Image (cartoon, rainbow, N blue to C red):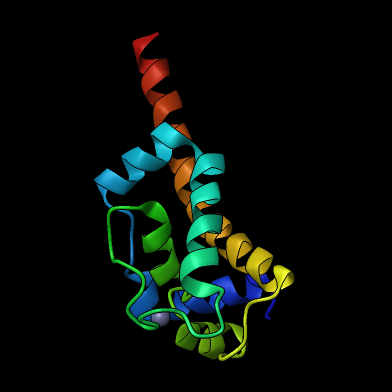
Length: 131
Ligand SMILES: [Zn+2]
């Protein structure tokens, strides 16, 4: 496992990863459910799709859209075990530990948080204009 901030800085330098963004649909979903609920979904996705020693369809198990967590996983290279190994130094072929799962959630949370603050600011701005 790497340091979360360090890995996020490296991801921002990746042309491919830094081009991944939430679209309106996922952003609306994040806003309406809230980060806490969305991260609960993340825990379920990680448990089912990423944590097993040999995940089903590994490398293709994460859709590219329709849930903010899926998008976040591609942006943060937590989409499959190959990317986890390459970017986060989490070895393939063994079940994720509790600590590793917590780390993956932490990375996803950090990436999604940037959108939460943006949408809150936009909301506050709108509210102020209408006051
Ligand atoms: Zn991947």
